[in-house]
Image (cartoon, rainbow, N blue to C red; front, side):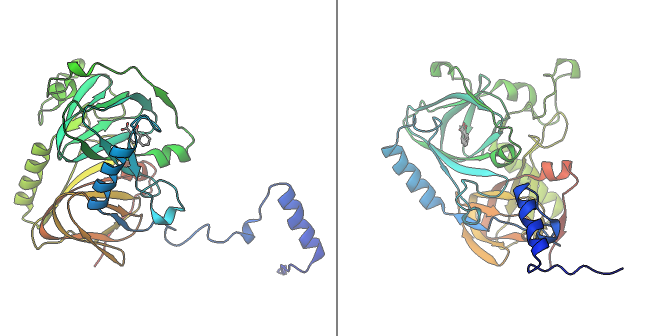
Length: 349
Ligand code: 1HN
């Protein structure tokens, strides 16, 4: 069998390429980098500093009303590797949101799912389909896909928190829908225990199956409180005797991830210790709640302190080293990778 030599000086071949192009066809043999031995990763390791996020959030609060653009005062982390897209990593949006005293971010819903991790302060309420969820430092609050949500700050202090959304994934799947909703009366927001926590918030205890809310793709528990997370991390450290521990936030009725697209994890690393150096398919954003140290992400080292946000792209080895005990929170797209059979993980030497 003879092998055809491809040469661009061949007029017949030139004509073929030209006709292919006219017909919007591309020959695979000319396409490079489609199948790489390991993932091609556009986003880069990056840290957004808490001091900058806080000060730029406050300046935005002074200068920009909340009614501009989506009714939210949000500063999106834009990964320097993503060509100006407002995404922290390829699959996740991460941002800080600033809500001033007496401000309301009115109700809306969208198909991208969101979660909030509160870095400091308290006093804001998020209503999720009318259920008022108090927000305090260290809490995780969920606003699953297509649930109405609005934020109220009846207090005299501003509040700043981290938002993470699966927006890049939903946008890539061309499945974004959005609508505005009716806002509720802020005066009603007085009960610190949400409906969702009253039924689903006690560890290991659930209403009888027949009395549970109709199963959905997300956790019926919408707020995970720091006191519970802190206790879980402390006990896990105690029982493993290791210097670092990770706990996954789960749907209490199924043991699965809290939402179908995002995995939430709490991490701690005790003073002087390091977390295992691992790499995983899928992307992650991490924020520090307490403590300080260094994150190693690929070849780069980032000093880390409370409120810093870190982008950890797919397949890049990462670990945390604690100068003083670190408590951190991270979100990844791991449930999607798992669902599609694409999840891989390696511990690195
Ligand atoms: C959104 O609805 C919120 O409700 C925050 O607080 C950030 C980023 C992109 C699209 C929608 C919120 C958002 C968002």
